Image (cartoon, rainbow, N blue to C red; front, side, top):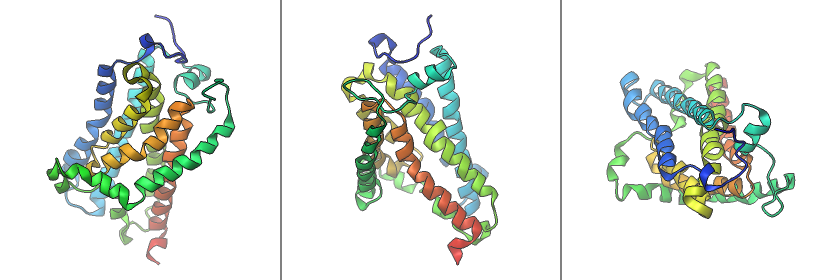
Amino acid sequence: MPKTDGTNERPGDQYSLGKILAIWALAAVPMPVLAFVIAPAIAPGESWQAGVTVWLLLIGGMIWQLVLSLILLARERVAWRWPDLKARLWLGAPRDPKTGGARYRLFWWLIPAFLFYAAVEQSPLGTFIGELILIPLPGLDTLSRLDLRILMVPELVGAWWLMGVAVVASVFNYFLGEELLFRGVLLPKMRGAFGKWDWLANAVLFGLYHLHRPTGALSTVVSGLAWSLPSRRFRSIWFAVILHGVEGIFVMGGTFAVVSGLAFR
């Protein structure tokens, strides 16, 4: 079997619908198991210790996504060289849809994409959309709401190791885990199954992947369009990495405020 750099999108080079759904399941199913089964068994209750436990376990789930991505690339026999990985995973500069040439100025599309994301996710609209899932599945409201604000307690002042956890979480959440798998590995291989709507299907899969945050899954489907559409149109994962990574600024800042004691002054 010849090696591939992932630059073409002929049907034979694309993933089947069954393979896409199988990859999604391998990434998604472990997360609620870790959050709602294993975590309560290790650290029951809703204390800050339980919050740290859930956070660490979910980081483990995102590290698994890196492993899964590497397995998929190995099975495709993608050469472990930067030019090949750059082409396969869309790690290059944005490309003009008409000419195919690299155009860094296309990054200006980050501005409207971010405004759309913020209008959905960081507003009451996002909460409303997210909780629509409770209409057909009201039982989901009984699950613990995974919220890092549970860690805003004086007991963690001076716990600088938590900054290390925040750094690792950010690396795997916004690049080497979720984004590498969903926008780097999956998105370039979804056109064969979904045609020109592959970016929409990618956003749906990414949103529904959040089974560990069920009341936020639907809002993530909508807000995630801001990541998948420009990544697809301009064939660059960096739109998703940068936009998703904005969350990391708040995670890092909030963690620093807690461990330094600034949050309690």
